[in-house]
Image 1 (tube, rainbow, N blue to C red):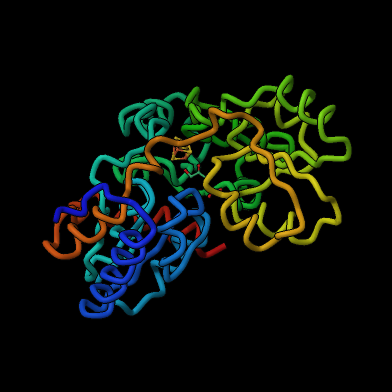
Image 2: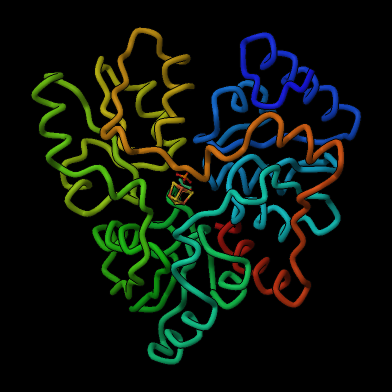
Length: 310
Ligand code: 13P
Ligand code: SF4
């Protein structure tokens, strides 16, 4: 019988078991972003936000890294680990924000603002990282910008992350008009309505949210920062302003707390593209291997290393 897309409980368990066996046999490690499907989070060797996953990918001694996330994340792992095999189980898992800027755009920005270093959000292509000075993630963007001596800093591609950082620095941020479509969907009216419905609820936002939504937030952090915040908070109700996948582990870790999504549309379709079957197929057949040409990988690696050095 063909079990593809047959996702009853027994089949999920059987596929998870098959993946665990394959990982062991091939000396592979499975890294999963916090937005991945529940059944993938359950079998991940390590789960985290973009920064934690970069660090983990850099430290593993496995031969193969199976990266359950989106392409730019697997690319970062391949940039840092040229002697390892990095697999992106579903090759179509991309990030629309990444496609909102090209390396040529960055080169033009540098010509316009020659004194300003370029901080590239990790949500960029390897080519963009290669022409940037330093990378950042949502967890360390403020720290990265404030570590630079220049008075003006170019931040690409997320205008919302750029304006969030602007709140915490005296430097002038030169922003690029990129954005994350799912995070745009939460608007302050959603928060107002939910806070009326759940008095005392705490609103937790991601820096990819619009400035108006950030203004309505009680706490702003990367996805892993949100786990820490809800764990330590005394509140009972939390309005979660990021991709719904994050709530799986939140509910598991905090059974007495209630988590409400800030907007029903807050789903990243790309983060949901990876299924258990993709992991099995790609590992069995050694498919969807991410390779970065050396002329791009070496300068891109410098930008990531500059970030990790902080
Ligand atoms: P973090 O997990 O690093 O907070 O990033 C969220 C995100 O949107 C990744 O694309
Ligand atoms: Fe890209 Fe937004 Fe999805 Fe993150 S949540 S991968 S930024 S589209």
